[in-house]
Structure formats: structure tokens, C-alpha cells
Length: 311
Image (tube, rainbow, N blue to C red; front, side, top):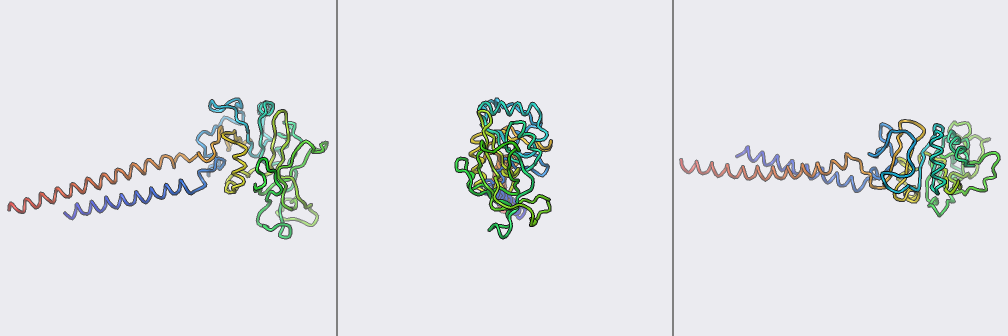
């Protein structure tokens, strides 16, 4: 009898552990921000989305998975390696009234901006705030005085580059979406602001009409990634830019594949999705095992009592 009691206790322990693990899993699904990050990179430096493609930057902007043309193409970083075919595809997208969003602090992105006939340029020198000029000296730059239309008023921009214009442009065609908080330009790249380095408030997000569409440039490649995604204003901006879907491409390195579609808040990693039914099934099996062992133990006890009576 003691053996069956031990088996029942083990079964109940397994059931209890399964319930605890299931509660932890459900809590993770409902509480964490990690599954809500469509732009985040894993440890291997690749997108977490299961529909990521490794076929290069060139994508068809006419349709995505049989759906309508996305309004927005988001390019995160780089731009120096974008080919003529890429530029042609982006130009067609703009001519059809689409939007291209370029998130970068890489000055090589100026090649792409020039190819798209955009006047804005990534200027030299990261923007750094100082204790005297900012109430939050630990932050690099927090966008201030933003544009209400796209929700740039509450966007946080870190480690930003200022956005200038070409030498022969007056910048009158572009619209400043966000200015930096008072900051200095670290022109020599030493992470500090020298007395001779310029200071002021600089454009960190601008919009410029191109063709029938619009190009938005933000001087921060990490605007929609990792810790930046925790900022509600940044998530609201992403929703405003992408609506239901968008194309996201990483042209700066082959390690970041193009993501063919974004579904904000619905891209729970496959491991989590598979884990839920596995744990549910395991819990059901454990409960069934406990019931079966309980019945088995009860039947054995009855037989032992019967034998004792006959003796």
C-alpha cells in the first residue's frame, strides 16, 4: 500500500508543478513586453519574426503575402549598400504615394538619401546632453517640440545624430517632426563635450515630400528596438507609421534579414506558442495519471483486505 501511496504523492506533485509552470507561462504571455517587440534582435543578431527572409534587401513592394501594398517601408540603419534596384523600387513606392522611414545615425545613409533625391542629410557628431542643459543627463537626447500629426511629441530618441540639409538646399521643403533637447555635438567622438564643440537644439526627425509620397528621417537607428520599444510614445509612433503592416529592412549587414511583414503585438515567439499547448497537454496527462494511480491503489487495497479475510 505504501508503494501506491508514494506513486499518488508523486503524481500529485507532478500535477502541482505543471500547474505552477503553466501559471508562470501565462503570466509571461500577458505581462512581458518581449513578445511585443517586432523589431528586436535575438542573440544571433537576426530578427525574431518567423517570416523573416534572407534574400537580400530587394523586395517586391507591390504586395506582401497576397495583401495590399503596405503604406510604409522602414529602413533601419545603413543605406550605403543599397543597390540601384533597391533605389528604383523605393522610388516607385514613393511615386505611388507610399512612405519610406529611414532610421539611422550612419552617415553612409546619405548615399541613400541622395539617391532618393532627399535634401536631408545625417550630420556629424552624436548629440549629448549635459547636466547644465538637461534635467536628465543620463539620457542622450529626448525629442522635444514634436509634431502632433504622427505623435512625435512623446517619442524618445537616444544617441541621435542631428539632421542637416545639403549645401545647396534651404531646407524649406522639409518639416521638422522633432527637435532635440538642448545638447552639444560630440564632433571628435570622445563621448564628452569640449568647450569648442557646438551646442543647441537640433532637428532629430524630419519629413520631406518625395514624388507623391513622403520620406521620414530619424537620426536614431534604435528608435524602435530593444529598450526604446519600452517607451510608449515610440510604440504609438510605430502604430501610426505602420498601421496594419509594413516592410522592415536592414541594409547595413547581411546579419539582419528583411522582415516581410510586421504585426504589432501579435508576434509571440514560436517557442512560447508551442510551449502553451505542451504544458497544457502535460498537465492533463499528469492529472489523468494521478486519477489512474488513485483508482489502481484503491483496487489493490480491496484485494489485500479480501485475502486477509479468507485466511
